[in-house]
Amino acid sequence: MKDLKGNYAVVVHRHADPDAVGAASPFKLLGSPTFYAPGGLSSLGKKVAKHAGIEFVEEAPKEDVIIILDTASTSQLPGVNLEGKRYYRIDHHATGNIEPFAVDPSATSTSEIVALALRLLEMELPVEISESLMSGIIYDSKGFRLAKPNAFKAMEYLSRYGSVQRAFSLLEAEEIDFSKRMARVKACERLVYRKVKEYLIGATRIGANEGDVARTMISIGLDVIYVIREEKDEIRVYARCSPRILKLGFDVSKLLKSIGEELGGSGGGHPGAGGMVIPPIEVEKLINKLLGRTSREIARLLSSGGKG
Ligand SMILES: [Mn+2]
Image 1 (tube, helix red, strand yellow):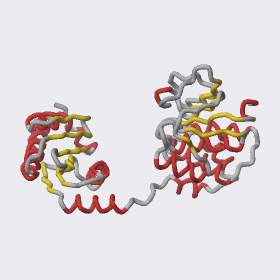
Image 2 (cartoon, rainbow, N blue to C red; image 1 turned 45 degrees about the horizontal axis):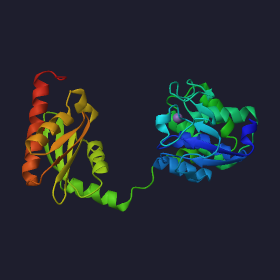
Image 3 (cartoon, protein in one colour; image 1 turned 135 degrees about the vertical axis):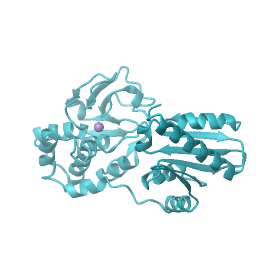
Image 4 (cartoon, helix red, strand yellow; image 1 turned 120 degrees about the horizontal axis):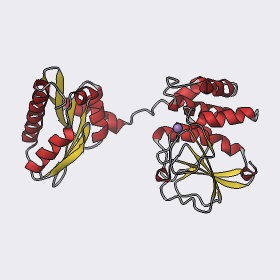
């Protein structure tokens, strides 16, 4: 592609993941690209970008030639206008409103498509590029669980130039920071829980990191958790559910909507994750109400045989 000789843009989707970033990495070997992530990078995406030695700008590209990676639709590219530009979409997503250039829906990752093209060109790769591409393949194939022969063909080529082990370690989450660990421990200390048959429901209070605390409480074994955060003139409640209780037909958003309205506020969300904002009340009372109503709802679902 003669377009890749001079200045051009490489663009990845919002919250770009290791596959998008991995697929972008070898372009730094071709001409003088600028890398754009108009919707930012995910935390693992950042880790891979750092490893690859590329910096992304969080804005819309200015260049006339654009390589679009791992992105099928303009809704994934906030603020980007493709009109009048020469663009090339390299991707493994089948459907979207961006004209395809090299799109293979049978590939498990965009990194795989890019790696196989480099393999055809018999490119010798720097170690950080081969490892970034491998991490993209590993990430999107869910650790090879979804991989097809071409993913291994790409891995065979890439592993000549880098370490598979380092590619895996790029995908390990960063160490949890102190404030998060502190919030998790406090949430456990303040946990109030009840057992309803074989289900565990609970509530806790915390001043920050509600989302992480809620996920942690589900991962330690609760089926429904309410994380309460008291602010100056309101109380916020975050809720999460286990897949186990969702199978029963439990919908926490309905419950929070009705309790929220009763208490002069509002609530909603999805069956498995919801929120509620209400005027200040005594937290003990609120916990009793949340757990009481949740127990009754579970009992009702169990007696009606679920899904009702
Ligand atoms: Mn992908």
